[in-house]
Amino acid sequence: MAESEVSGVAAASMKEVAALAGVSLGTVSNVLNRPAKVSVSTVARVQAAIHQLGYIRNDAARQLRDGHSNAIGLLILDVANPFFTDIARGAQVQAAAAGYSVLLGYSDDKSELEGRYLDLFEEQRVHGVLISPIGNVDERLHRLRQREIPVVLVDRVSTDPSFSSVSMDDVAGGILAVEHLVSRHRRHIGFVGGPLSIRQVEERFLGASQVAAAKEGVSLELVPTAGLSIAEGRRAGASLAGRPTGTRPDAIFAANDLLALGVLQAVLRSGLRVPEDVAIVGYDDIGFAEAAVVPLTSIHQPSNEFGRTAMDLLLQEANHPEQKATRIVFKPTLVERDSSG
Image 1: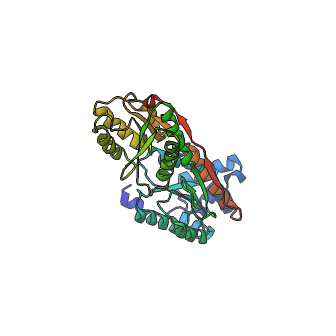
Image 2: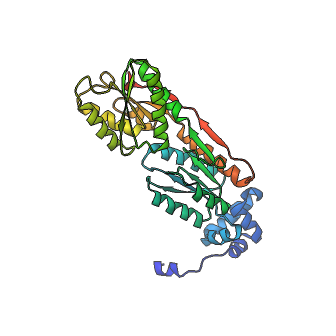
Image 3: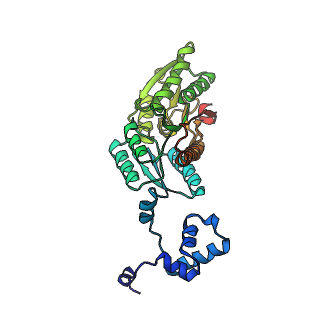
């Protein structure tokens, strides 16, 4: 049959599915929406009829009737960063187990793009939203709530205590990283990261600064970057490696693993040795950290668990909107590898 003929065929209806399967319309509805209420044999018979007729459910009509779709909106900062893709993977697994699908968007650190995705989620009447916001978007998130769309923040904490969140104690992570470097007899430590307007970067630098201030003979130098990418890490690493001996740091704490991997590349290309000349510690413990040419010491964040926990919180709020907000803060751990000696 030609494609034009296919497009002219009328869509099968639930009534036709019910007739072919020999069941009621209500049974077909239960198979589509609440299969646990129907016997296995009946589910199989209805699914066979759906397949034979090519029936496609009308989710738009169901959303108008129910008020919400069967999808969760997930908005992350950077789809190219394995940390955020692991969060998305964990969230998707939990959503699927509960019978929901996930609409994934990424803001790329652009407020305009973030706003467009939030508009899309609102238009699609999603069941809830998980978001790693760029800045303070509390007013926009309150609008979602007014539409009875619950919101949970991931890897962020809102200034508004009414929002649930799942985040990391990044000050503690900064402390862990620099204490480790000091224990390896490093005294001039460079913090590579930025901009400091990103809360996580600011807090990791704060933790690092606290250790440096408390340790006699230890200095901490801020080496700002325009972003958190491998390219920015290479740029910072090349600048540091080009300094004369005695003026460059003997250790680098990078605000994330992508920066740390860029620094590692630049330092090795310059002819310096890691960790003999420069020790390096990253943050996030992404999969590429262990696979680097010099395996990277990193502060571990349970990114997959972030996603799973945040999705569980969101579904709880969707089912029990009266419950109070919950803030879950994970504690970081240090994973020691060759890059720090």
